[in-house]
Length: 148
Image 1: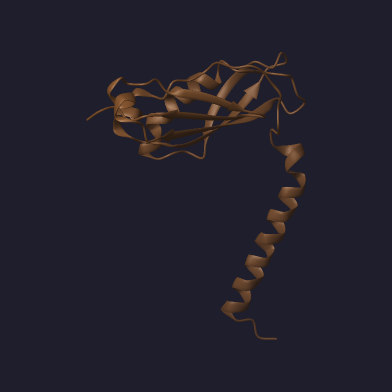
Image 2: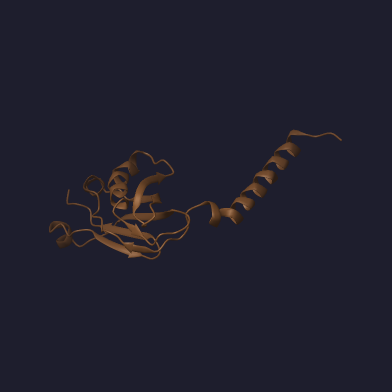
């Protein structure tokens, strides 16, 4: 039997697909899953990101102690320059959350930052940002851009 490069590539892709399926089936046991939030603190839109008009998503993986307090927060995946404006404040905020203790000793928090259109008066008056929590661990922070 002659094995071509194309055949090898197809076999490699099929193998990777099978591995991905196996990981998905084991994911609830290996990765921090849905955790119940017991306490959280709001987060204003980071000033520099708002001034620059940047938005984006920051996904934070947390480690929890036995009482459900966040002991470590890490952004995943490592983010680019634009998102760095959002990441520092987000990680500091995540450290102030508390969850119902879980066997996985962790939780994932998703922060979405969105710039929204505002009326001229709202922009002129610098309306503050809004923080909206959506269970189980998703947060949306919206703000008007600062006047230029």
